[in-house]
Image 1 (tube, rainbow, N blue to C red):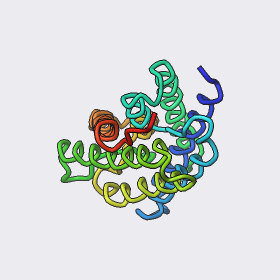
Image 2 (cartoon, rainbow, N blue to C red; image 1 turned 120 degrees about the vertical axis):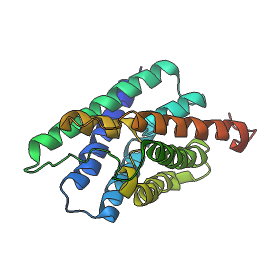
Image 3 (cartoon, rainbow, N blue to C red; image 1 turned 90 degrees about the horizontal axis):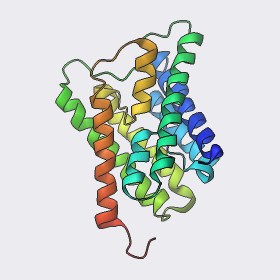
Image 4 (tube, rainbow, N blue to C red; image 1 turned 180 degrees about the vertical axis):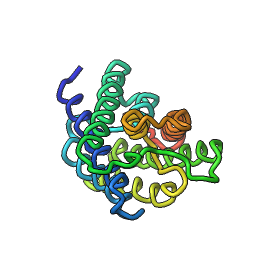
Length: 215
């Protein structure tokens, strides 16, 4: 197992939670600001660490790539461990340094949104994200613009889903703030939804969209 890959995934996931959840927790950023905070982390680390680990920084993304045969099972387990650890540490540090951490940007359902509705939203939005990853970074079709496309996909997903589910799309994004805040409300759907969405995107890619000439 490559130590550099694990370090890159740990730092990337830590940053996503510290910056993304932090932007939401401090309350000074509107929806657009929160969406950009998450999306810009993805863009930045796609170019900083993409050549090292692929910049998954999301257990659901790693699952999708595992289903598609783009990562080995043992490597995926290592990625999952450091992604969750990075997310937890990011949230714990936020709780320690913010003068008023509030709910730490925990991913919760907005009042009036049922768990089933929230589950569907997380499935669909994660599908969009992982679908973009497959058809840009994995396929190689987008060249140097893959990181930008992936980051922008997360931005548009948060713009739509943020007011409803806070648009996690990422079990590590959910687990860290949940542990640090002690708020585990409906946490199951933030694991099931992204994983289902990622699997659907993987199946679509390998079954329909992948060029027959690709390895």
